[in-house]
Length: 322
Image 1 (cartoon, rainbow, N blue to C red):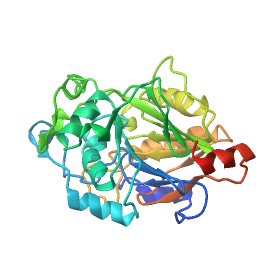
Image 2 (cartoon, rainbow, N blue to C red):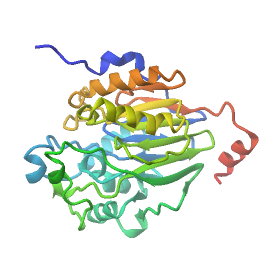
Image 3 (cartoon, rainbow, N blue to C red):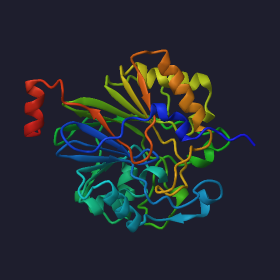
């Protein structure tokens, strides 16, 4: 049997792994769609999913009950040197994005930002209202030197045969108290997240193509590619044009490439045939010489933005945290 390409087949596209020290904005990839974004003063995490409660698809999706594992979450946070976070941001509320969010908030004395569905999960996880922010699309949220804006978006379509089953309710209709069935972690409202800093702009986005969407201009994009191998070549081409080329991003970080049911400490493997998507994104970037594609291994920390070309105003804003 022919073996499919693994993550190490793409070492050429691994970003440089650096220590979190000095000035700049750093990103640590933690599997699935989870990224830790931080500068020297503030830390933000997107879509934490550390518990990894085994198989979550197939029949398990409807019958299996899951709950966050506080020990695994603490172990992971310790490994990346995080005791305090300023914000936990959710793009949406499927289990592999939202299960661990309330426990991460509790362990890091943080605040959960997300949709009304995220609020249901937060309340069920034991958070009080002072730790919950239901986001307003008209607002920009200030966290130190970071400026956070949520932008309405869509989830990548599932295959037609399962779409009515997986997303037959779009929002989480009740407070979810774990252990809870996987199927009850509905998609909820779906967002792209713009994370702006005096040193640069990052857009965190999923694999959903939107016909008339206009993306903000950014320096880098972190894009979820899980499941895109199931979509057509044409779909991926249009998504690349919309999410990356039109946003003028120079750096693209591919996330959500790893299997959902493997422990975060186990050697990572591609989710399904995700290597097809990786190859295609590399090919598309090759037609746009200004775009560089990176596929970060789990635990990799990269310097997203450097302060080398800061203006006086940027230095002042960063120093006083406006």
